[in-house]
Image 1 (cartoon, rainbow, N blue to C red):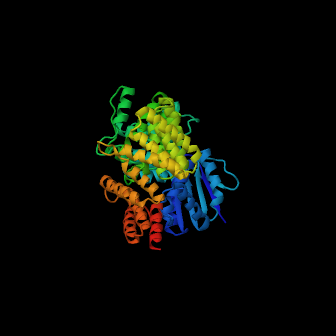
Image 2 (cartoon, rainbow, N blue to C red; image 1 turned 60 degrees about the vertical axis):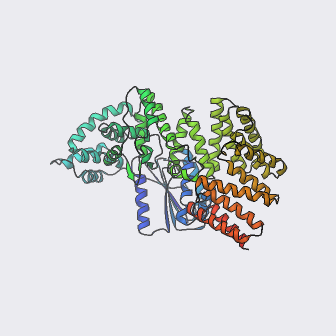
Image 3 (cartoon, helix red, strand yellow; image 1 turned 90 degrees about the vertical axis):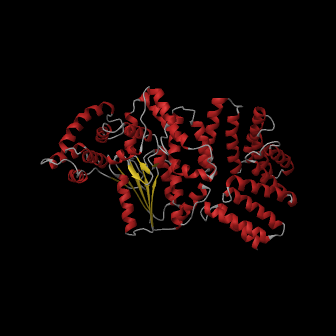
Length: 588
């Protein structure tokens, strides 16, 4: 019988920490066949983080995130003896998504952590209370072991424990401060009481954060250097999930765009984060460090956002937005696997900052980043997540540039390709034709952007078996991208590949083969011999060889393609599995 429970309590009371300790205890003592801990603070996080556990259960990474999520859910339905911890289910949307999922999670144990008090009878909840006084005193005495000691330490620690309401987050940060600054408990108490009066001015019962946490935070905040404060303010607008350290600096300062924004708004020079800033925040227990990343407690994030004056909050939001936007280079683009080492860890942070920026009515660089993020998600086949982003970008750009601007056409093109990928061809076709029309009007008939739009329309026509209409369109694309009198445009190899495949489908192999070999040659020169694009061309060329009755050559090409795919993707990736199926076909 499935066991589902919720641990509920105040922010900062230690729900997540308790869940982590339970997970470690269960893993060490092998109480379950598998233990999973995922952040589920939104429906998007729930789906994305569930999909990420696929490799841990032997599924491997699947290009289509929705398919990967479904594979994980099927595994959980078919296997028993597992523990799944869903952390930070605090919002109504997150709770609804979890409750809808629970019927499929009937073979194991589900543990939910949440600040929500209300859960249905099917999800019994227990309230995690604050630490009792004796435990709070012991935590303070043990954690602040390097403090200046007096004969009144236990008495003073007891006074502080009462002020901090037994909240582990506040106790931990207070103890870290006392130890690092070599304070006595008495000195910290005196300053804490003075800060309390100031905090109550801006944090009353309606601020959503325990006052004890806010006061303890302010005590630490006041001694932080400017770079550390900047890092906290910017990080407060990101996700509570691990933040890559190199977001703030990589080979030097990374906040150039954000710096200018803040200096223009505030009229003063800004000091920006360094490696020392991260070390300082870690010593004061304001962040928790892991390898090349750090985590900021969501309650600390809330306190920081509340403390920023309303007139400055949008400026800091824009600074965070610009920082994230500048983190992703133009080349390689988000649909290139070589850029994914940045996109993967930043995925929850991009989603968070885009939602905040769009709500505040910041059109740029929100539109640009939203479009890039949608392209990344589309390439990963996360269609449900990408589609609303694409549709919103179209709205933003139409308002910014007008309905017939080429920037609008580019975003419509992305939406149309997603519709085609999800088999909504009737909806996609008029959008693609609109893109061609806008590009031809803006650039003339022989521009590479026109070729891209024509190529996509031709592929759709091919999918609907209108080959006679598609072929001249593809030939026009090849001619434009060939760029007579100059170097071919970057998409030329793709155009050759597409035309070759159309010719192959109509049994014109003698014309198709040299085109496919030329496409392969171009991609090897552009990407190197071991790029997935090269492997795709090898697989297509292999099928031409097989149709020419050359199974040995076809197999050789497929073996090389398989080696490349396996070096880039997991064994269950569609490219790997598709190549294996082709190898079976040519060997049969």
